[in-house]
Image (tube, rainbow, N blue to C red; front, side, top):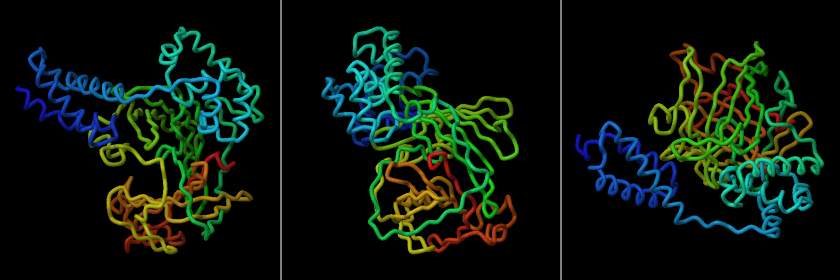
Length: 419
């Protein structure tokens, strides 16, 4: 086959690859043009056209690396710089104010290694190259820095993967009270639909509660297990164990690779076992990936910087969205009272951006953590499966109207964060 035919066949995958790595659309288009031009000039060096896709993707990867290499600004580190960054960033997801005191009490050597690993999210190899020390030395310094931090930390920290909190089997009573205060902007770094923040050493447990019974139907334990790379894009690997209410053994074990940037959070790959076969999906798998795991324009993921955009209007149980794809917006500020705990939150509404016929309410506090998540189904959602409308199946459940269409409350979700 000639160059034009091969490029036409694989162009969509190449474009997805570059747009996934470079968020700026104009810059991504420039990199694509450089990729196509280089591939055209070097096409006669390709001995086996069956390898064209892998060959041109390697060219695209190098062009992306060149792009970041030219634009990268490597900061210099000193004891003063490190102390300042502690006040500006929350390393490893810890957001307690006493963190600054703990860091200031550490030796500069410990602060440096923790800053490079958790704040800048450099790999051990990258730290080795930056500090001109062996990888083995990086590992030992990182270990002792962690231990020194823990020994000075005034709170009990749970170990990676340790489930120290047990969620209640029945959903606690709660109230949602509309606030007169202006909704606040918030940094929301959770992986969409899974509540975990894709950063090193993060873990979370959460459960789904059916209504009106309020009994839990599914329980999920998640933890970040380490760094991972998919098609040249670095992220973290996340393990998810899913349990139903009548078994102490997981009915599903998934692994995700997710990436968190300053502006977006997205899934790069997913794997699970089905009928004894391990299945793997990445962002280059097109519609098969996008249908279940992709989100946002060009699969860019969901935004992490939330503020009111006036895409959705809500008055009581009546909601109107702008009808455009990926319709998510903050619709108000609310006090959420669960048991004897009170949370100041904003409500993020999602109108069918993740699944047709599904609307959700997500109450997020100032730490960017989900306090309460509620799902509503369109009255005729999956009618061919259930042969009944949701208002018939759940006549006592809360109902809302979205763009003139009826939706019925199905289940809620809380995590060990609120305990």
